[in-house]
Picture 1 (cartoon, rainbow, N blue to C red):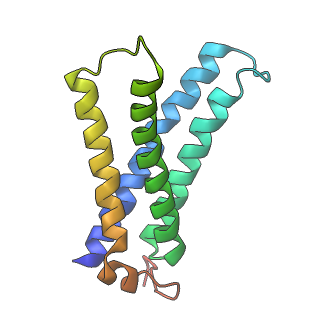
Picture 2 (tube, one colour; picture 1 turned 180 degrees about the horizontal axis):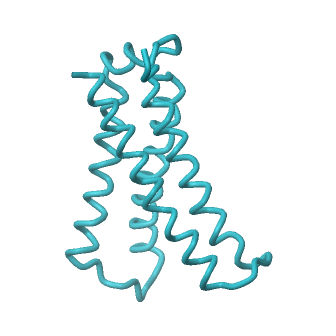
Length: 139
């Protein structure tokens, strides 16, 4: 059961990596030639996608570093969403209203990343994430 949950988590990270790739191509096509002012809009989603694919591969192969990277990735996203929501509400006088879909989206994203963080903190998952596990498909 634990191994199948780890593989599902690896698929979730692979899906997150795939979902950020269209933003890279959209910004690349929309902004035209790359220069210093717009390269950030391409590099950040590309780095996010590469990191998601790396986490997906490492967790699929039951490598312990996959769990460490996933924990760091999840905590960074939870912290960024939480801090941006709190600071945005406190710092801005004319902050846009937090509508129900926005609140639902934030809660779903925090729940998904929180659930994945909780998964990788379970003792059975950390025990099964070893570096010497045979994961060959052929045999």
